[in-house]
Each structure stands twice: as C-alpha cells, then as structure tokens.
Image (cartoon, rainbow, N blue to C red; front, top):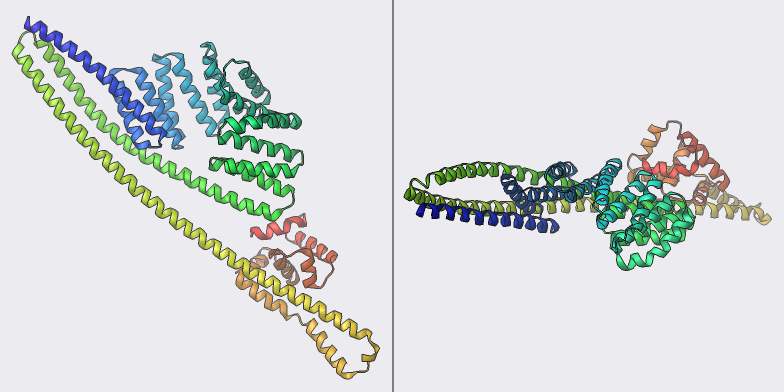
Length: 546
C-alpha cells in the first residue's frame, strides 16, 4: 500500500512540476518580448533562447514557435537580416509541421516585412501573398487588411501599379474598423495615383487625407504624406508648395532614412528653382545623414555579431546542461521502476535527487547572475568606447568645418581684393578718358607725365601673379591639378577658372578681366569645351568636384 501511494504521489508531483515548467517557459517568452520592446537585445535573446531550449526538450511547439519568431524579431531590429531570416524560417517549419495557419501567416508576414526592409521586393511580395491567402481562407479580416495594405505598398515599390491598386481596393472592401490601417491604405492609393502620373487625382486624395493623418497617425505616415504632396506639387511645377511640404516632411521625419528621403526631394526642388548653392548645401547635409545612417547600421551590425557570439556560448552551455538533465531523468525513471521492490531505497534516492537538483539550481542561478553582471560590464565598456569614437569623429568634423570656413574666408578676401583692383583700374581708365577729352590739358607736360604713370599703373598685370600666389597658398595644389588634368589651359584660362571657383558672378569676372559680359560668357563656353564639358553651366560643379 505504501509503495502504491508513493508511486501516485510521484506522478502527481511530476504533473505539478511540468505545469510549473510550462509557466516558467511562458514567462521567459513574455520577458523576452518586453525586453525586445525596450531594445535590451542581449537580455531578450538570453530569455528567449532559454525558453526555446525548454520548449524543444519538452516538444512544446507553440512555445518553440514564439521563441524563434521573437529571436528573429531581435535580429531584425539589429539589422542582421540574415540571422533574422534563419530564425523566421525555423519558426515557419514548426508552424507548418505542428501548428495551425494563424502561426504560419504571422511568420510569413514577418518574412515579407524583412524582405521589404532589405529592398528584396519580389521576395516580399511572394511571402506577403502567401500570408494574405491564409488569412483569407481563415476569414480573418484583421490579418487580411494588414497583409493587403503591406502587399499594396510592396507592389507600388515594384512598379506593378495595377496589382497594387487591386490590393488597396480589396482592403477597402474588408469590414474592419481599424483607423490606422485604413489611413495607411489611403496613403498607398494616393502614392499609386502619383506613380501612375494621375497628379490631379493624387493631389485630391492627399489633400482630403491630410487632416485625418495629422490627427490620427504617427510621424512616419505624416512625413510620408507630406513628402508625397511635395512630389506631386513638384511634378505640377508648383515649386513653392513643393518646398513647403518637403520642409514639413523633414521636420516630421522620425528616423534618419525618412529624413534622407526628404533631403533628396529638397535637393530636387532647389535644382528646379536654380538655387544651386542651396542644392549643394542640401547635398552636403545628405552626405552627413548618410554617414550617420551608415554608422548606426555598422553599430547595429557590430552589436548583432556580439550578441550572436554570446548567444552561441549560452547555447553550448545549455546543451551541456540539457545532457546532464537528460541523464538525471533516466536515473529518475530507473528509480521509479525499482520503487515497488525497494521502498526505502526509492525514498532515499528521491530525497538525494531532490537535494542535488536544488543545489544545481542554486549554482545555475549564481552562474546566471555572474554572466549577467559580466554582460552588463561589457555593455558599459562598449558604450564608453562608442562615446569616445563619436567624440573623436565630432572633433574631426569640427576641425574640417573650421578648415573649410578658413579657406572660404581667405577666398572671399582674395575675390574682394581682385574686385577692388579691377574697380580701381576702371576708375583710373575713366579718369584718363575724362582728362584726354579736356583740350586745355593737351599741352600740359605735367598732366601728360601723370597720365603716363596712370596708364602704366593700369597696364601693370602683376596683380594676377600676386593673386595666383595667394590662391595657391589657400587652395594648395588646385591650379597644378588643373594644369595636370588639362594641359591645353593657358594662364588666362587658369585665371578665369580661379575666379569662377571662388563663386564670382559673370559680371564680377568680366569687371576683373576688363572684358564685356558677352566676351566673358564666350570665354566660359570655350574653356568648358577645353575641359570636356558640353554645357558651360556644368563648369562650376566640375571645378568644385576636383
């Protein structure tokens, strides 16, 4: 009787332990999801991987799917799309082998979004359509609406505007009162009209949509709609409205990639307005933002690799622990089969096993705490190193900006000096001409001598030698590079190009060279042909690119 009671007690205890174990696994998954939302990727991946090991050992397929899917989401957030795809595909395999269609369409949509972020639009469309078909067969309006909007946006990117319009129309037919999804769908329809070159229709849709988007959606959709309005107005040659909405798009942009799209549009508008200096300035800003975006991506990739290393180390430790746990279970089952024969020995063995597990658990918790502290220490060191690198880069950019400003100031001084000398010569010529028209001075020897000196002063061209010397000191090696790249350029050509490089106007250059504006224009065209340009308007950009 005592043996039977002991066996029943063992099974009861084992059932309670299993239920508790499942709760522990679920709590690890919940903690990992919360930490993912807080961008604590190391802690999130550690908890999710623990949950995955537990779920795999016990064949809990739903928990294994959730753990893998969220591990993939971690790597997606870290911009490591290769690792993200690997875990999504593992989750997909579990979903189609052991779970229902709801799990399958969730991971298919995640894969589609991953390919969309990686600009693999055809792959994104393939997985997105599979997710949409499953949602339609399951009659799930929420999923159908969400996946349909995603597919419409993807086909807009591909350029299959007819298919994109089909999905946007399908979403409108779905009776699902989600304001955000419906607004995104209308934005997609507006973009579709714009890409189809139906600018009037696109403008009408965007104008009617704008108040609701301003009121109900987040910054990403608002920035996108502003940018779309700017593009429509630019196509209609309404540069003022295009500029206004472009600036609003940049102001509302929540991230670097959205800002870069806005600045690209801004450069196009300034080019259309022939404000080339503003366009060049915007392109400089674009370069800075692109550099910042690359630094963010590189930092994310470095962090992802570090997390992958820590995760693999943990997986090795977990595999060893799993082996030990498996061996302990075999011991328990062997012990259970002997309980009917030797009751006292069974009780003694159970007690020893319980104590052993307790000590191991305490030891494992201590090791986990030590590992967590080590991870935090490494993270702190990494943050300090990143701050030092950022400070160094900021100092370098500041020094470059100061050097550029110093060169610009010196070039402005040189141009001002050249203009001063040209204006002085012009005044002297006018004085000489006025005196020559006065007959009473014709026989005056003193006046003739002074006129001769003035003429010599006007003819003296040593100012160019002075200017060239100072120009080379400020813009080291620039004239030598021009001579080396274009040996056919003579000294007059180099002089003209130096003034043009300093952003002097055609009128100012003609004043310095004492030639007419028309002659100045012809000289510019002649020099453009010498350097291999078909259009004189491109000459300044070419000089600035050297």
